[in-house]
Image (cartoon, rainbow, N blue to C red; front, side, top):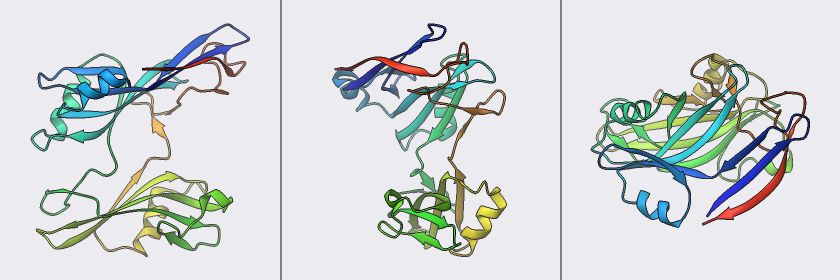
Length: 233
């Protein structure tokens, strides 16, 4: 079922409606974007490529940016081919990401499956934590940066590959500072990705998912409030 939410700015009357959506690329190369309901879930399940879809807003460019996150793809389809299909599907600005768990071997290029998935964090005492139960985020523990770890092993190369996805960077560390911390705890085959925010592909400024309390895109004097909510199937 898809969640449909209607928002209103009480100052200028601006309205905005969001709905949970997915996308898929069918066998003809057509990119489909539809609400996440039973019929679309069934149709997308047989597609060679599928993923999440969401609209973000760039206050600098004053326009929406479409975000595609691919979490399923056929091994026969090249990443570049998928990106090209999405880019050519419309003239809208786009952010295209592959799910963080997708990974190829750094040395031989083989597709790898994630063997371990953990949370990690560098706390305010510079202690590095990694593990399913090693760091309790819900208890209000403070940290400098945190994220998700994916571990891979390439049976062809007999190599362990570590992938750290940064989702929060409270200390505003630079990339080199984060890498220095990670290098103290991992081997040479380490991949580092920042996911703490999304960037507009046109202006380079941060984009935002509009929800309750977001600044109104039109007047920028008030926040959006929820005026309607329903589930669609």
